[in-house]
Amino acid sequence: MLKGKTAVITGGSRGIGKAAALKLAENGADIALIYAGNDEAASDTEREIKSLGVKAKSYKCDVSDFDKTGETVKQILADFGGVDILVNNAGITKDKLILQMSEEDFEKVININLKGAFNMIRHVFSPMMKKRSGSIINVSSVSGMMGNPGQANYSSAKAGLIGLTKTVAKEIASRGVRCNAVAPGFIETDMTDVLPEKVRENAEAAIPLKRMGKPEEVAELILFLAGDRSKYITGEIIKIDGGLYI
Image 1 (cartoon, rainbow, N blue to C red):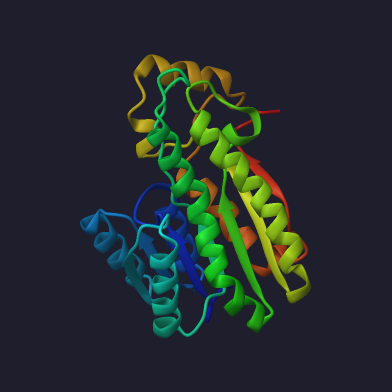
Image 2 (tube, rainbow, N blue to C red):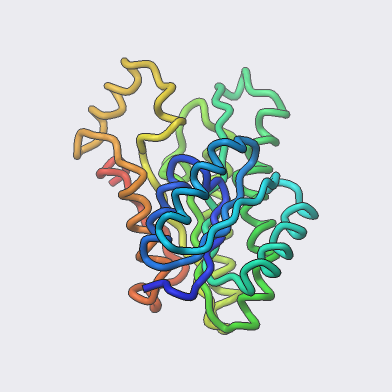
């Protein structure tokens, strides 16, 4: 399905990013994995991807750094020969109510979750336009659609990704490149593993399907948007939240 294509995935060593990397690799894509700091997790994921019979290489990069992302994309182009799929998944949380949230807490989340996606898109824009094909997939969140107490920074960044997705889709469509976003609800990842049990129970009770989603389920949606089965879909924000936000 994706044989001969190269996918770049940010935040790709764990959680949704890792699940997406493995799913795209299972379907034939070569994987360029961008991670922030966990060398061991990145190496483990890279080995796991290679075991599927595709090319894989990991790159340590702070996606909030415009120049560094440019250098990283340039190296990926040299190593893989092109970029066909970009999955902007890198993200962090620094949850606090606004009265307790520092300027640093707000800026850090915006810089990684939103500016990081802009940086990556900006640097793959030209290579994709020259090929006149490509798929960009931004990982937003239902928090960016409905808001969430204690997440002014995170919700703002994820809402910003929705606007970025729609704008990029309009700007790049004439060159055959698509841009869509997925908006997960509560997914079983490192971020939700740290939730107190009572908070987790309350969250699951609020979900019509009465459970959290799995990273592999989000990865299936990313696979759909990455391939030709979705070639007439662009500028869309697709929720995957068990009915949390209806």
